[in-house]
Length: 261
Image (cartoon, rainbow, N blue to C red; front, side, top):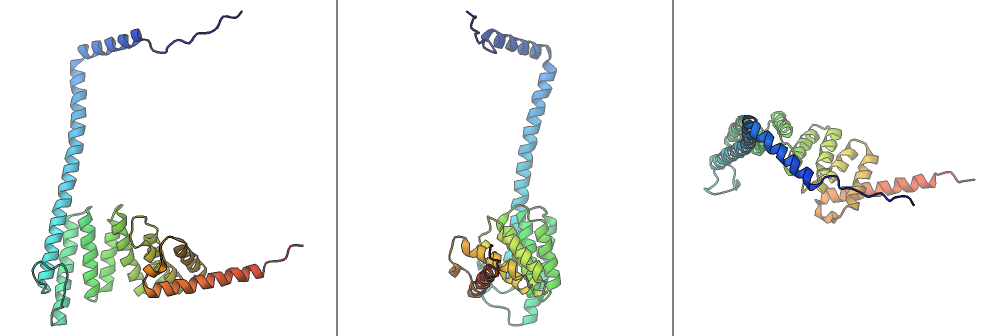
């Protein structure tokens, strides 16, 4: 009868003790190397902790500067203390325009002074809004483009900036570019108004003459969860029109299909 094979443990207790003895012996023989290694680990840990603290303090400083600017702007526009929005414009329109232009530059300067922060992106976004309200769409577009370049991975904030960029393209009659910006915003899972963005993308593609793509996006919006009543009336009606066109085109294609022999 053949002798059965017996499995042996890969690592016995004696081997573990031997390895531990060798490590202990090496540590005892190389105290300087051990100290250097431990020091390197501590330096890396301290460096990472310091970077996190520094980054957090940068964000805090930028947020404080942004909040201060927002308060100063509201005060300059005549808003009462503690107000969070402008309830009445200055009596002289030229005064309001000058204030917006002045603070637009201040917001943009604040963004330059605090790069790579969320507050800087918001500052560029706000600066662009003020320039647009002051009648300078070209500079507003530049500010929004700069905000888009520094927004990072914040989906909600990126979506807002993309919507501004899309609005600027639309004002220039660049419907395909406007549609693409809206579509990108609509693809962001963390953007609360993504369905609005998709609906606007469909509308802009329709204006650009790309009715097939517009119909496809309209059908996608309808298929997603949520009521179309959540959308603004003009978007809901446009989507209904595009869906109807898409359905008609599909029926026509089926009617023209050749009959199988």
